[in-house]
Image 1 (cartoon, rainbow, N blue to C red):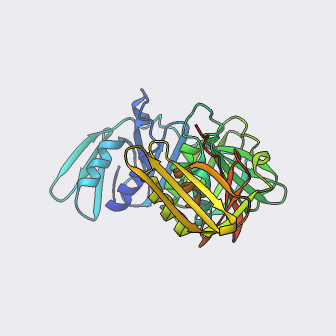
Image 2 (image 1 turned 135 degrees about the vertical axis):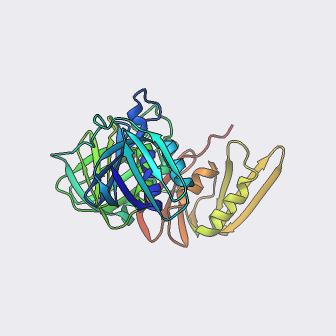
Image 3 (image 1 turned 45 degrees about the horizontal axis):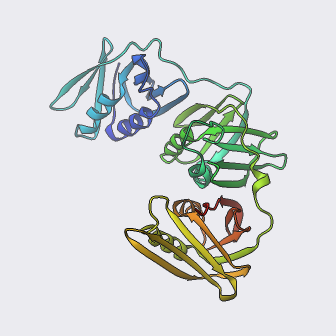
Length: 366
């Protein structure tokens, strides 16, 4: 095999592929990345058998062929060389990288047994705008559990009803994020997308434009784009019946500047200690929100903000970081804070777009 391609494209593609190798595998070939030429295209593929990634870049092909190269040393080498283009020649399972002044040989692996990405023959299909799909995923992924103890909550729920409305939701039992949006599909569905895989998928999508075709069944999901293919196994299990815990009545509601709330929560975080605890007090008669924190070593802090509020006085404690996470996806100047009483979750929404709902549970007072 012999080809020449743009160094920047090759480096970027190998870095994306490297995320899907099996670093812990005892099978050396799964720690590698496959390079295969096809006419004027270089195919780059990696897999850990649970996920897989394949991308395609333009190349000047002098001789067809296939090789599997070790991921990390190959990426380090290509990243360190200078020049706009990279010339690669493979001989006897070795990769020869040639520049004007250097020749480097990296030992590769036999390619015959490198896995192909699975195909889903009878799955459901949805076509997404990459920009829109990124927006939906980024609205919720952070709320999923980072622990694998309960796989069902270390996943993002995708659920489509009979009205062509998709809801995606994530929770770690302390907070919940839900986003709903319209899409076209043939029948109701639901599946659990492992959050770690979703984060990898987000990083892939950020490098591309246009539309992506998502095909899925109960066991796996494939995403197809003119420049890449992505595969992941889905989580088995049942997502919590979260809709029953979303409050429908509220004792206190207030609308406040999103920017001012974020700025003052960050300021309060300096004094919030290891548990990141902040106290929120709302006084509707005075249209006042008070944010207070204290640390036995650093001191204490109080912010007083204007809020258009109705209902009862409320005094509750929350994790400062959790509230900030929920405010990040909201794209409006104002946010609505809805309190449903002591010991009940705080609901945060965009007054101009109620398709996004974020719940955060209060911290228990000692």
